[in-house]
Amino acid sequence: MEETFYRTHKYLVEHLAGGVRRLLMDEIDWSERLIGIKGSRGVGKTTFLLQYAKEHFDTDRSCLYINFNHFYFTKHTLLEFADDFYKHGGKTLLIDQMFKYENWSKELRICYERFPNLKIVFTASPVMRLKDENSDLHDIIKVYNLRGFSFREFLNIQAGVDLQAYTLSEILKNHTAIAEEICAQVKPLAYFQDYLHHGFYPCYLEKYNYSENLLKTMNMMLEVDILLIKQIDIKYLSKVRKLLYLLALKTPCAPNVSQYSKEIETSRATVMNYIKYLKDARFFNLLYPQNEEFPKKPEKVYMHNTNLMYAVSPNVESEDLRKTFFYHALHTRHKVNAATDNAADFMIDRNSKLQFKVEEKEQEKINPNIFYAEHKTEIGEGRRVPLWLFGFLY
Image (cartoon, rainbow, N blue to C red; front, side):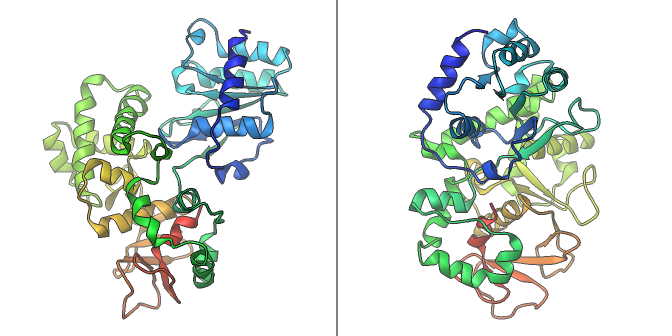
């Protein structure tokens, strides 16, 4: 095996900036032998792998980070590399940009079966189907999702605090006491708008123009995560881009599939497939009534996170921001459906029947069957919960 891989690993680990320790680090069962870390472009998957290496191995040669950007893998196979690494005492192989290697799933399966003491952890695009029944890995892989910064993580960075995450049950039962404890250390509402605008993607910490950086990331998501991985001809890129823009300008919205079909000059079925691809790449979230899902038309389409809304248009309605933030925050841990109560916006977890209304400020009259997520409330009471506090679910 070429020594250059060890030198690169050593350099990257030794020069890794402090960064933010993600909650996912403690949620993964690291005893598993094959782990896939899925996440949209720009959320910090590479940094996450290197943080794991630094925390558990530092520069010990039993752990090695490799990236399939390296041209070495145009001539050499993953199986050959893993075999050599294993023979030299390798125990943990961390792999980035896995999608660039043609036979990745088949060879990962062989590695899993041939090297019983080798652990492989790799990053994956959100559009890659790792656990589908037709996947080579569906019965041996554990898949985890790395998301962009939660409001809690953003607040910890910006205010220099160390605030913990809470479950939805804890928030609904004890939100007044939790909010009082948090507000004794920091004023969340002073940071909330900044998070909505630029706090989700870690690249905001870099010394570049955030909006330009995010636009580049979005285009990479289109060109790589959708066209390349889904093997869609490049000539259709303009149609997918236009559909993305048309939807993004109106979200949250009930999609007019017939109108979009005319505007991008393709069939209704193709429009629905494109919407699904955009959802899988984490441009959008699709809101369905309970017991419905794709390929049915969603009741509403939401942007995946509020930062994407600002990237498309600087003029974003406050109501749209509130609902998009809430959907994303709850979607990370829970099933989100359209509310069954006409007075509410969302239903969380079908069996629990939790109904939520997202509001700008405190309401004089409340429905006793609905929880109210209130944007301008610092500390809530009863069924009135501060909207910002739902950003503490991870």
